[in-house]
Image (spheres, one colour):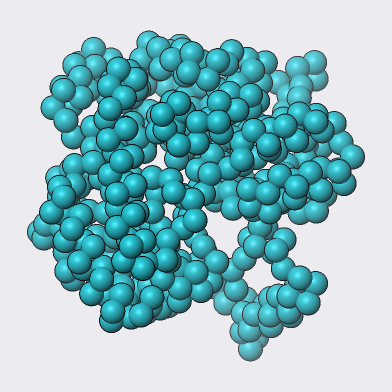
Length: 440
């Protein structure tokens, strides 16, 4: 049986009792006749997962060439609706050449920790740009957005000392998370006690957050939520949530992995939410979505973020992104700032697709963000839809449990800006065929 903190928090008392009974039953079943635990069930886990459709047939397919609007998998060309670097700028010659130029100057690796040998200039310039965007004191870059999130939790719960005179102890910090926060935020808190060290509030619900904060008697609270949630495309009421954080003296950490460089200008949706975002104590971004490369960053007060270089673990003990990657991230950010019509036109295409699907009677996510989620329902039907569309030449991402609740499986779409109108029209026609077949 699989569950997590935010799922368990949503259970009623009766559901919690049933869950514990099932957990005990499974524990009993896991014992052999000799009373000793069965050893190493990985093969059975993989076999069962493949039989249930959780894994792709014949293992992970081999992708040849670049990931973009079209991909070639195991020798077969397909229209790709699974990619997250949706503008396709990472495929353009000018940025490929820029990456190569910086590779010749800075090499393919950082070569070690910034604390031991210094920060490379591309990382420094990218961090300075993030300070400018968010109006913050200090930014630290990481290898990925997930490593930034994990590193933040590590740093803000750490008890560490260089010696008896240089110490820090944050074991008494309390985290309050939106129940739909990403795995990379929930997982590093799994060792902390739910209900005393970790709490959850209802998704995008300011009143629920306030109810939780009223019960907590502590001066060290961190509230964590996202801007745009990847499964349902919902957008947080950023200003209202930060208002409540400020009212109760809580720090705020906002994961903007899915919204960075997409929203924030007056002519685009959710402008007010992004105006309020700069008030957050900490802002995390991923460069893998609109920018289309790799890496992540946390911006915030220097007194905190500087310490993350030591306390996060994901900065000191592992590599950050390559220097040419950092340089190209900055180049694309500046390109998008200087050419806002790229994103404006992309968002219009997303709205057009959404309107088309609504007119055809598809059940979509409520919030009209650039993420379009098509609700299917049962996990087994969703898996058949994925397989059928794959046969038709469309690679799509299906989200099912544990990414979403059981019985609420969906297709999560982020169309690629390099898709032609013919690509999109063909996909819609294929989608209509499978809907008729499976009645979702």
